[in-house]
Image 1 (tube, rainbow, N blue to C red):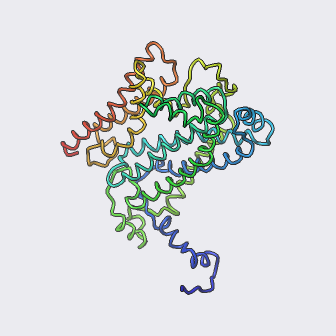
Image 2: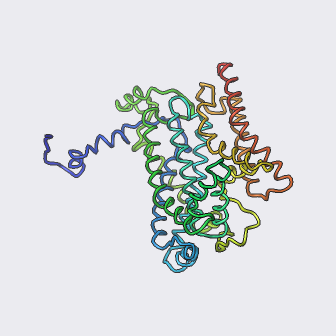
Image 3: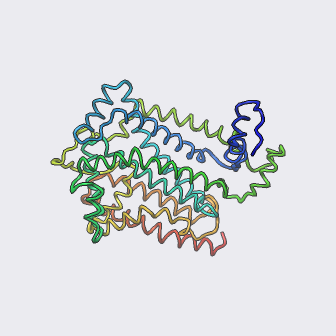
Length: 409
Protein backbone atom coordinates (compact mmCIF):
# COMPACT_ATOMS: atom_id res chain seq x y z
CA UNK A 1 0.00 0.00 0.00
CA UNK A 2 1.26 3.46 -0.93
CA UNK A 3 2.31 5.86 1.83
CA UNK A 4 0.04 8.87 2.06
CA UNK A 5 1.66 11.87 3.74
CA UNK A 6 0.05 14.99 5.09
CA UNK A 7 -0.58 17.28 2.16
CA UNK A 8 0.74 20.87 2.18
CA UNK A 9 -1.93 22.11 -0.24
CA UNK A 10 -4.81 20.97 -2.44
CA UNK A 11 -2.57 20.16 -5.43
CA UNK A 12 -0.34 18.01 -3.22
CA UNK A 13 -3.43 16.23 -1.80
CA UNK A 14 -4.73 15.51 -5.31
CA UNK A 15 -1.30 14.49 -6.56
CA UNK A 16 -0.97 11.76 -3.94
CA UNK A 17 -4.31 10.30 -5.03
CA UNK A 18 -4.59 11.11 -8.75
CA UNK A 19 -1.01 11.93 -9.87
CA UNK A 20 -2.18 15.29 -11.18
CA UNK A 21 1.36 16.68 -11.46
CA UNK A 22 2.32 13.85 -13.81
CA UNK A 23 -0.86 14.40 -15.81
CA UNK A 24 -0.13 18.13 -16.14
CA UNK A 25 3.41 17.33 -17.30
CA UNK A 26 2.22 14.85 -19.94
CA UNK A 27 -0.56 17.07 -21.26
CA UNK A 28 0.83 20.56 -20.77
CA UNK A 29 4.13 21.62 -19.24
CA UNK A 30 6.24 18.90 -20.92
CA UNK A 31 4.31 18.67 -24.14
CA UNK A 32 6.46 20.46 -26.71
CA UNK A 33 5.38 22.72 -29.57
CA UNK A 34 7.67 24.02 -32.36
CA UNK A 35 8.50 27.72 -32.22
CA UNK A 36 8.10 28.20 -35.98
CA UNK A 37 4.32 28.36 -36.14
CA UNK A 38 1.86 31.18 -36.77
CA UNK A 39 -1.63 32.16 -35.63
CA UNK A 40 -3.20 29.56 -37.93
CA UNK A 41 -2.09 26.88 -35.46
CA UNK A 42 -4.63 28.29 -32.99
CA UNK A 43 -7.59 26.96 -34.99
CA UNK A 44 -7.73 23.78 -32.90
CA UNK A 45 -8.20 25.70 -29.65
CA UNK A 46 -10.84 27.91 -31.31
CA UNK A 47 -12.70 24.79 -32.46
CA UNK A 48 -12.65 23.41 -28.93
CA UNK A 49 -14.04 26.72 -27.61
CA UNK A 50 -16.79 26.74 -30.26
CA UNK A 51 -17.74 23.15 -29.46
CA UNK A 52 -17.99 24.14 -25.78
CA UNK A 53 -20.27 27.06 -26.71
CA UNK A 54 -22.43 24.73 -28.80
CA UNK A 55 -22.81 22.31 -25.90
CA UNK A 56 -23.59 25.01 -23.31
CA UNK A 57 -26.03 26.93 -25.54
CA UNK A 58 -27.59 23.64 -26.64
CA UNK A 59 -28.28 22.69 -23.03
CA UNK A 60 -30.11 25.99 -22.44
CA UNK A 61 -32.15 25.54 -25.64
CA UNK A 62 -32.92 21.95 -24.65
CA UNK A 63 -34.82 23.22 -21.61
CA UNK A 64 -37.56 24.67 -23.84
CA UNK A 65 -37.34 22.80 -27.14
CA UNK A 66 -40.12 20.28 -27.95
CA UNK A 67 -39.10 17.40 -30.26
CA UNK A 68 -42.60 17.08 -31.70
CA UNK A 69 -43.69 18.06 -35.23
CA UNK A 70 -46.69 19.96 -33.83
CA UNK A 71 -44.67 21.89 -31.25
CA UNK A 72 -41.06 22.14 -32.48
CA UNK A 73 -41.44 25.23 -34.70
CA UNK A 74 -43.30 27.28 -32.07
CA UNK A 75 -41.00 26.16 -29.26
CA UNK A 76 -38.03 27.61 -31.20
CA UNK A 77 -39.52 30.70 -32.85
CA UNK A 78 -42.03 31.72 -30.21
CA UNK A 79 -41.13 30.28 -26.79
CA UNK A 80 -37.32 30.53 -27.03
CA UNK A 81 -37.13 33.67 -29.18
CA UNK A 82 -39.89 35.71 -27.52
CA UNK A 83 -40.93 34.36 -24.14
CA UNK A 84 -37.75 33.09 -22.49
CA UNK A 85 -35.44 35.78 -21.09
CA UNK A 86 -32.32 35.90 -23.30
CA UNK A 87 -33.57 32.87 -25.22
CA UNK A 88 -32.79 34.77 -28.43
CA UNK A 89 -29.18 35.17 -27.31
CA UNK A 90 -28.67 31.46 -26.73
CA UNK A 91 -30.23 30.62 -30.08
CA UNK A 92 -28.07 33.18 -31.86
CA UNK A 93 -24.95 31.81 -30.11
CA UNK A 94 -25.89 28.27 -31.15
CA UNK A 95 -26.64 29.21 -34.77
CA UNK A 96 -23.56 31.39 -35.27
CA UNK A 97 -21.29 28.84 -33.56
CA UNK A 98 -22.65 26.11 -35.85
CA UNK A 99 -21.64 28.12 -38.92
CA UNK A 100 -18.36 29.42 -37.52
CA UNK A 101 -17.25 25.94 -36.44
CA UNK A 102 -17.31 24.85 -40.10
CA UNK A 103 -15.46 27.98 -41.24
CA UNK A 104 -12.71 27.20 -38.72
CA UNK A 105 -12.74 23.48 -39.62
CA UNK A 106 -12.18 24.34 -43.28
CA UNK A 107 -9.36 26.75 -42.37
CA UNK A 108 -7.85 24.08 -40.10
CA UNK A 109 -8.04 21.50 -42.91
CA UNK A 110 -6.56 23.79 -45.55
CA UNK A 111 -3.71 24.83 -43.24
CA UNK A 112 -2.86 21.14 -42.73
CA UNK A 113 -3.00 20.55 -46.49
CA UNK A 114 -0.92 23.65 -47.27
CA UNK A 115 1.85 22.72 -44.82
CA UNK A 116 1.73 18.96 -45.45
CA UNK A 117 0.75 18.21 -41.86
CA UNK A 118 -0.94 14.94 -42.84
CA UNK A 119 2.37 13.24 -43.68
CA UNK A 120 5.45 11.82 -41.96
CA UNK A 121 3.85 9.87 -39.13
CA UNK A 122 0.88 12.21 -38.74
CA UNK A 123 -1.56 10.05 -40.71
CA UNK A 124 -3.59 9.19 -37.61
CA UNK A 125 -3.81 12.87 -36.70
CA UNK A 126 -5.31 13.50 -40.14
CA UNK A 127 -7.68 10.52 -39.93
CA UNK A 128 -8.92 11.70 -36.52
CA UNK A 129 -9.51 15.17 -37.95
CA UNK A 130 -11.47 13.77 -40.90
CA UNK A 131 -13.58 11.66 -38.56
CA UNK A 132 -14.38 14.82 -36.62
CA UNK A 133 -15.33 16.57 -39.87
CA UNK A 134 -17.80 13.77 -40.71
CA UNK A 135 -19.21 13.76 -37.18
CA UNK A 136 -19.63 17.54 -37.08
CA UNK A 137 -21.36 17.33 -40.48
CA UNK A 138 -23.80 14.74 -39.12
CA UNK A 139 -24.31 16.84 -35.98
CA UNK A 140 -24.99 19.97 -38.04
CA UNK A 141 -27.44 18.21 -40.35
CA UNK A 142 -29.37 16.63 -37.47
CA UNK A 143 -29.52 20.03 -35.75
CA UNK A 144 -30.66 21.79 -38.92
CA UNK A 145 -33.77 19.62 -38.93
CA UNK A 146 -34.85 20.40 -35.35
CA UNK A 147 -36.47 23.87 -35.90
CA UNK A 148 -38.92 22.09 -38.26
CA UNK A 149 -39.02 24.96 -40.73
CA UNK A 150 -39.60 24.67 -44.46
CA UNK A 151 -35.96 24.22 -45.44
CA UNK A 152 -35.33 21.90 -42.48
CA UNK A 153 -38.13 19.60 -43.61
CA UNK A 154 -37.32 19.53 -47.32
CA UNK A 155 -33.56 19.26 -46.82
CA UNK A 156 -34.23 16.27 -44.56
CA UNK A 157 -36.56 14.77 -47.18
CA UNK A 158 -33.86 15.03 -49.86
CA UNK A 159 -30.91 13.85 -47.76
CA UNK A 160 -32.68 10.94 -46.07
CA UNK A 161 -33.83 9.76 -49.50
CA UNK A 162 -30.25 9.39 -50.80
CA UNK A 163 -29.81 5.78 -49.59
CA UNK A 164 -32.77 4.76 -51.78
CA UNK A 165 -30.38 4.50 -54.72
CA UNK A 166 -28.53 1.61 -53.04
CA UNK A 167 -29.46 -1.76 -54.55
CA UNK A 168 -31.64 -4.18 -52.57
CA UNK A 169 -31.40 -2.48 -49.14
CA UNK A 170 -31.95 1.13 -50.29
CA UNK A 171 -35.72 1.54 -49.72
CA UNK A 172 -35.61 -0.34 -46.40
CA UNK A 173 -32.67 1.78 -45.24
CA UNK A 174 -34.57 4.99 -46.02
CA UNK A 175 -37.56 3.73 -44.05
CA UNK A 176 -35.32 2.78 -41.13
CA UNK A 177 -33.58 6.18 -41.07
CA UNK A 178 -36.90 8.04 -41.19
CA UNK A 179 -38.80 5.67 -38.94
CA UNK A 180 -41.60 6.08 -41.46
CA UNK A 181 -42.26 6.03 -45.18
CA UNK A 182 -41.97 9.83 -45.19
CA UNK A 183 -40.23 12.46 -43.06
CA UNK A 184 -42.47 12.63 -40.01
CA UNK A 185 -42.55 12.91 -36.21
CA UNK A 186 -40.53 9.69 -35.82
CA UNK A 187 -37.81 11.19 -38.04
CA UNK A 188 -37.64 14.33 -35.91
CA UNK A 189 -37.35 12.22 -32.74
CA UNK A 190 -34.51 10.14 -34.24
CA UNK A 191 -32.55 13.20 -35.29
CA UNK A 192 -33.17 14.85 -31.92
CA UNK A 193 -31.60 11.84 -30.18
CA UNK A 194 -28.62 11.92 -32.54
CA UNK A 195 -28.11 15.66 -32.10
CA UNK A 196 -28.33 15.96 -28.32
CA UNK A 197 -27.05 12.59 -27.17
CA UNK A 198 -25.25 10.11 -29.41
CA UNK A 199 -23.23 12.39 -31.71
CA UNK A 200 -21.92 14.77 -28.98
CA UNK A 201 -20.66 11.78 -26.97
CA UNK A 202 -18.89 10.31 -30.00
CA UNK A 203 -17.45 13.74 -30.91
CA UNK A 204 -15.99 14.10 -27.41
CA UNK A 205 -14.37 10.68 -27.71
CA UNK A 206 -12.86 11.45 -31.12
CA UNK A 207 -11.59 14.85 -29.89
CA UNK A 208 -9.73 12.94 -27.18
CA UNK A 209 -8.35 10.56 -29.82
CA UNK A 210 -7.34 13.50 -32.03
CA UNK A 211 -5.32 15.12 -29.23
CA UNK A 212 -3.80 11.77 -28.26
CA UNK A 213 -2.59 11.10 -31.82
CA UNK A 214 -0.70 14.42 -31.71
CA UNK A 215 1.29 13.35 -28.65
CA UNK A 216 3.83 11.14 -30.45
CA UNK A 217 4.54 12.80 -33.84
CA UNK A 218 4.02 16.27 -32.30
CA UNK A 219 2.69 19.33 -34.08
CA UNK A 220 4.09 20.18 -37.52
CA UNK A 221 5.74 23.58 -38.12
CA UNK A 222 5.46 26.13 -40.89
CA UNK A 223 8.84 25.21 -42.38
CA UNK A 224 8.22 21.46 -42.38
CA UNK A 225 11.46 21.12 -40.43
CA UNK A 226 12.19 17.77 -38.82
CA UNK A 227 12.85 18.46 -35.13
CA UNK A 228 14.49 16.26 -32.52
CA UNK A 229 11.95 17.06 -29.82
CA UNK A 230 13.83 15.29 -27.04
CA UNK A 231 17.07 17.19 -27.70
CA UNK A 232 15.30 20.53 -28.09
CA UNK A 233 13.20 19.92 -24.97
CA UNK A 234 16.40 19.24 -23.01
CA UNK A 235 17.78 22.63 -24.09
CA UNK A 236 14.54 24.29 -22.99
CA UNK A 237 14.62 22.62 -19.57
CA UNK A 238 18.27 23.60 -19.12
CA UNK A 239 17.28 27.24 -19.50
CA UNK A 240 18.47 27.64 -23.11
CA UNK A 241 15.05 28.79 -24.26
CA UNK A 242 16.31 31.05 -27.05
CA UNK A 243 18.41 28.27 -28.56
CA UNK A 244 15.67 25.65 -28.28
CA UNK A 245 13.37 25.14 -31.27
CA UNK A 246 10.43 24.22 -29.04
CA UNK A 247 8.28 25.78 -26.35
CA UNK A 248 6.05 24.18 -23.72
CA UNK A 249 2.34 23.82 -24.42
CA UNK A 250 1.64 25.59 -21.12
CA UNK A 251 2.17 28.41 -20.48
CA UNK A 252 4.06 29.50 -23.63
CA UNK A 253 1.92 28.18 -26.47
CA UNK A 254 -1.50 28.23 -24.83
CA UNK A 255 -1.13 31.86 -23.71
CA UNK A 256 -0.70 32.89 -27.36
CA UNK A 257 -3.66 30.71 -28.30
CA UNK A 258 -5.79 32.37 -25.64
CA UNK A 259 -4.93 35.79 -27.08
CA UNK A 260 -5.96 34.71 -30.59
CA UNK A 261 -9.09 33.09 -29.15
CA UNK A 262 -9.98 36.36 -27.39
CA UNK A 263 -9.70 38.30 -30.66
CA UNK A 264 -11.84 35.68 -32.41
CA UNK A 265 -14.48 35.88 -29.66
CA UNK A 266 -14.86 39.62 -30.23
CA UNK A 267 -15.72 38.89 -33.87
CA UNK A 268 -17.95 35.99 -32.81
CA UNK A 269 -20.10 38.00 -30.41
CA UNK A 270 -20.27 40.90 -32.87
CA UNK A 271 -21.87 38.45 -35.32
CA UNK A 272 -24.11 37.01 -32.58
CA UNK A 273 -25.47 40.45 -31.67
CA UNK A 274 -25.57 42.24 -35.02
CA UNK A 275 -25.32 39.81 -37.97
CA UNK A 276 -26.72 36.52 -36.68
CA UNK A 277 -28.98 36.32 -39.77
CA UNK A 278 -26.08 35.08 -41.93
CA UNK A 279 -26.39 31.77 -40.07
CA UNK A 280 -30.16 31.44 -40.49
CA UNK A 281 -32.04 30.75 -43.74
CA UNK A 282 -35.07 33.09 -44.12
CA UNK A 283 -37.11 30.22 -45.62
CA UNK A 284 -36.66 28.29 -42.39
CA UNK A 285 -38.75 30.87 -40.53
CA UNK A 286 -41.81 29.39 -42.28
CA UNK A 287 -43.31 26.27 -40.63
CA UNK A 288 -42.67 22.94 -42.35
CA UNK A 289 -45.33 22.15 -44.95
CA UNK A 290 -45.17 18.84 -46.79
CA UNK A 291 -47.65 20.13 -49.38
CA UNK A 292 -45.59 23.17 -50.37
CA UNK A 293 -42.18 22.47 -51.89
CA UNK A 294 -39.70 25.41 -51.88
CA UNK A 295 -38.76 26.65 -55.34
CA UNK A 296 -35.14 25.71 -54.70
CA UNK A 297 -33.94 23.29 -52.03
CA UNK A 298 -30.37 23.64 -50.76
CA UNK A 299 -28.42 22.89 -47.55
CA UNK A 300 -26.44 25.24 -45.32
CA UNK A 301 -23.42 26.97 -46.90
CA UNK A 302 -20.89 24.54 -45.43
CA UNK A 303 -22.49 21.60 -47.29
CA UNK A 304 -22.95 23.39 -50.63
CA UNK A 305 -19.69 22.15 -52.22
CA UNK A 306 -20.54 18.49 -51.65
CA UNK A 307 -24.20 19.10 -52.58
CA UNK A 308 -23.07 20.51 -55.91
CA UNK A 309 -20.95 17.38 -56.49
CA UNK A 310 -24.15 15.37 -55.91
CA UNK A 311 -26.29 17.28 -58.38
CA UNK A 312 -23.46 18.24 -60.73
CA UNK A 313 -24.01 15.00 -62.63
CA UNK A 314 -27.46 16.26 -63.61
CA UNK A 315 -27.89 13.66 -66.35
CA UNK A 316 -27.57 10.68 -63.96
CA UNK A 317 -28.80 10.49 -60.37
CA UNK A 318 -26.79 7.28 -59.79
CA UNK A 319 -23.53 8.87 -60.97
CA UNK A 320 -24.25 11.91 -58.82
CA UNK A 321 -24.78 9.76 -55.75
CA UNK A 322 -21.56 7.82 -56.42
CA UNK A 323 -19.61 11.07 -56.86
CA UNK A 324 -21.14 12.47 -53.67
CA UNK A 325 -20.10 9.39 -51.68
CA UNK A 326 -16.56 9.52 -53.05
CA UNK A 327 -16.29 13.27 -52.36
CA UNK A 328 -17.22 12.72 -48.70
CA UNK A 329 -14.15 10.52 -48.14
CA UNK A 330 -11.79 12.10 -50.70
CA UNK A 331 -9.78 14.14 -48.20
CA UNK A 332 -9.32 11.10 -45.96
CA UNK A 333 -6.94 9.57 -48.50
CA UNK A 334 -4.62 12.58 -48.93
CA UNK A 335 -1.70 11.02 -46.97
CA UNK A 336 -1.58 8.21 -49.53
CA UNK A 337 -2.49 10.18 -52.65
CA UNK A 338 0.41 12.59 -52.00
CA UNK A 339 3.30 10.45 -53.28
CA UNK A 340 6.10 12.89 -52.40
CA UNK A 341 8.03 12.39 -49.13
CA UNK A 342 8.60 16.16 -48.89
CA UNK A 343 7.01 17.89 -45.90
CA UNK A 344 7.14 21.60 -46.64
CA UNK A 345 4.74 24.51 -47.13
CA UNK A 346 3.08 24.61 -50.54
CA UNK A 347 4.97 27.76 -51.60
CA UNK A 348 8.18 25.69 -51.49
CA UNK A 349 6.66 22.99 -53.73
CA UNK A 350 5.83 24.63 -57.08
CA UNK A 351 3.56 21.94 -58.56
CA UNK A 352 1.81 21.29 -55.27
CA UNK A 353 1.34 25.05 -54.76
CA UNK A 354 -0.60 25.28 -58.03
CA UNK A 355 -2.59 22.14 -57.11
CA UNK A 356 -3.54 23.63 -53.72
CA UNK A 357 -4.89 26.92 -55.08
CA UNK A 358 -6.77 25.28 -57.94
CA UNK A 359 -8.41 23.05 -55.31
CA UNK A 360 -9.45 26.13 -53.28
CA UNK A 361 -10.88 27.82 -56.39
CA UNK A 362 -12.79 24.68 -57.34
CA UNK A 363 -14.30 24.37 -53.83
CA UNK A 364 -15.38 28.04 -53.96
CA UNK A 365 -17.01 27.52 -57.37
CA UNK A 366 -18.83 24.41 -56.11
CA UNK A 367 -20.06 26.36 -53.06
CA UNK A 368 -21.33 29.30 -55.13
CA UNK A 369 -23.13 27.19 -57.73
CA UNK A 370 -24.46 24.83 -55.06
CA UNK A 371 -26.86 27.59 -53.99
CA UNK A 372 -27.89 28.62 -57.50
CA UNK A 373 -30.85 26.99 -59.27
CA UNK A 374 -29.82 23.92 -61.29
CA UNK A 375 -30.71 25.26 -64.71
CA UNK A 376 -29.07 26.45 -67.92
CA UNK A 377 -25.34 27.08 -67.79
CA UNK A 378 -25.32 26.43 -64.03
CA UNK A 379 -25.62 22.72 -64.79
CA UNK A 380 -22.60 22.72 -67.10
CA UNK A 381 -20.42 24.70 -64.70
CA UNK A 382 -21.52 22.43 -61.83
CA UNK A 383 -20.61 19.32 -63.83
CA UNK A 384 -17.15 20.66 -64.73
CA UNK A 385 -16.45 21.72 -61.12
CA UNK A 386 -17.72 18.41 -59.66
CA UNK A 387 -15.78 16.29 -62.13
CA UNK A 388 -12.77 18.56 -61.72
CA UNK A 389 -12.78 18.07 -57.94
CA UNK A 390 -12.63 14.28 -58.23
CA UNK A 391 -9.97 14.35 -60.96
CA UNK A 392 -7.91 16.94 -59.08
CA UNK A 393 -7.87 14.87 -55.87
CA UNK A 394 -7.51 11.33 -57.21
CA UNK A 395 -5.48 11.85 -60.39
CA UNK A 396 -3.77 15.25 -60.43
CA UNK A 397 -2.38 15.05 -56.86
CA UNK A 398 -0.62 11.65 -57.30
CA UNK A 399 0.78 12.69 -60.72
CA UNK A 400 2.09 16.06 -59.48
CA UNK A 401 3.65 14.61 -56.32
CA UNK A 402 5.22 11.67 -58.18
CA UNK A 403 6.87 14.19 -60.54
CA UNK A 404 8.04 16.16 -57.48
CA UNK A 405 9.47 13.00 -55.90
CA UNK A 406 11.29 12.03 -59.11
CA UNK A 407 12.89 15.48 -59.31
CA UNK A 408 14.15 15.05 -55.74
CA UNK A 409 12.35 18.13 -54.33
